[in-house]
Length: 215
Image (cartoon, rainbow, N blue to C red; front, side, top):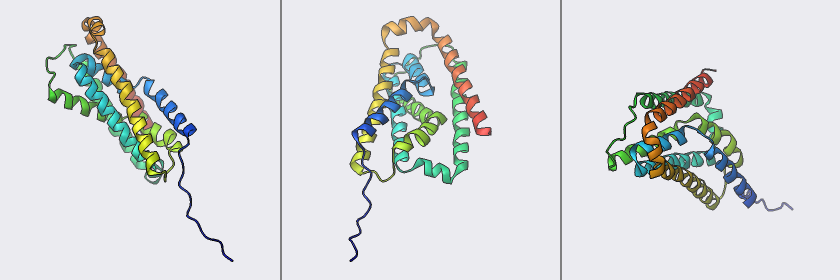
């Protein structure tokens, strides 16, 4: 007598797995990179509101990466090996463009604090993370190993919410810190050198990405 065939059970997100993913993500967030550099400079140059907009842009891009990882980003990159190189080249060019803009800066604090500046800051933060090959490598390899396709919708929603909230909280704190009056007072006379430093770091990152893409 043939037994009843049951459909395969959906993967379940255990508390230990969730805690592990959140811990890994926290370590990735606090490590210095283009996201930190852009949010920091935006908060200093354009003010607290623009810095928070940039933080929101970074968190939004991270939310997209989490969804793509759940859908099997590693499988997509494996099926389309050329896509990774194309994205790396585009990311390198964008990082280089940001670096040149910082190097050309005169270290002045603009007066514009309006909605347009906020929207531009959001786009800058969004593209910085979305085109960051470090983020691609992280979500495409490390995180996708823990995010198994086929997770229950409730688990996906919970994980997405926590990762995006964790990202937004960290970069919002960065924006608040570097837009505070004591920090601004110390950096105001050193803003041009901060721009030069951030620009140099972004250009170095762009060069490293270009070398990786050429291999």
